[in-house]
Length: 481
Length: 110
Image 1 (tube, rainbow over the protein chains, first blue to last red):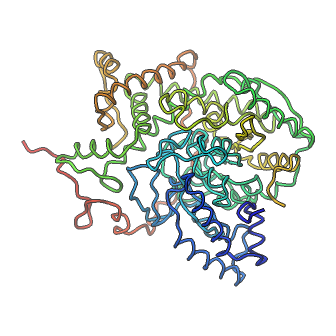
Image 2: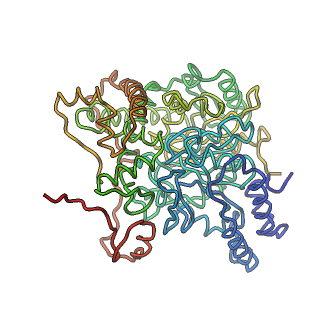
């Protein structure tokens, strides 16, 4: 096994025991980023900064002042998460020269634990998309089949982890943007409870839906990374409830007696037959470890997507009104202020971003606000209540992450509504604020990865970690030796 | 620029539908070419039609949920704390003067 194929936790152990140095490990990863640059997973490689950092971390390990399980392990960060003085572009012309004066809390916490930032990953522009095709810097290719998409919007992080260009990475998830690319690329993606990881430094798309999530080779790695970034932050008012937790302590607890609900309506209609079969097979594997499976019907599935897109686009239209060329970002000058706004925003934003801003503006405008936005907020309550009801009976819900595997690059570009349909199984967890993860559970006849989604009640990431780790043990899927 | 709201009378609502993209372009401060506007109009109408699905539900009596956590978020003490310097905050701006953002004239002369 190549060193870059190992899990983050096993690399952390090797670094602590001096089997390899931080700079040696980093060098191997930097070689991978060079060899695989055709995948276009990265927007920025932080070569010089990462070398300086590696030397500093090595000194701290040698002086025994840093013994965190992830110290010295190279990570990637999605390019909508602020990294001080390092380009943070949101894959948009609008921010193509933006270097934040501060780092996101999640990044600071990982750096405190000794993480080495290898680079900033490619994404759909402003996190709006499900295929990483709308990036100003070009599409990301799926490492399994480079003619196919990596998923989105955290497609760059997913591709980087899957192709061993980093040991783990941070993504963001608003309607499925960590889970779906994890599913398409065959890795683990964990979206924590809304408000459990600080959004300070996460460039906003839809503020009541956005979350920073973790992407890694297995559930143990994701648990370790989540443990470092989880917990309240004074800089984010919405992140005040969650307590710092060691999620790795749940990895070996098993799942005997756990009740797993399987919503049967997530397996019909547009779900690819192979995907449905693989996910159900995955569920049956969990029975071998003592879990109990129950089929049931989740109501309101037909209303998930309209509710999500109305809410997300409304919030996006407000959040993206800040891009006016004045304080930061791309600026196209004009003789008058309004002219400057129009020129800047017309040239600075890509098509999908413009589409969502316009949709959001429409649903918020007087005359339409009641029929769309207010209605969506009421349906959001209904959806959340339906999940709360399900969790009264079941400890965890299990379903496909996406209705299909990765499709060909360019296949859905001219049909935005078809693209949006790909989010059907992920948006409900986003609307409800609950944690959810995607773990790989097989491949289709073309060898493309399939993801199984695990959903738990708010603040119960421990359940997801237990199930994910149990599944890996049963199927031999973990990369740890 | 704050969140965008504009009041439409009934006749303007009809006009908004007929010239959906034009009206929205103006509100969003985004210009589209004629070709882009035509394509965008078709796409937006399709998506808005899809969103109308929510009209099937009888939910008038329900309250809205704008946030997944409905508790009261604790506020910090009303105490001044150190923050970022003016220089750091102005670093990314394209036009500055004397520690301020410089912008085109906003008020038109008569």
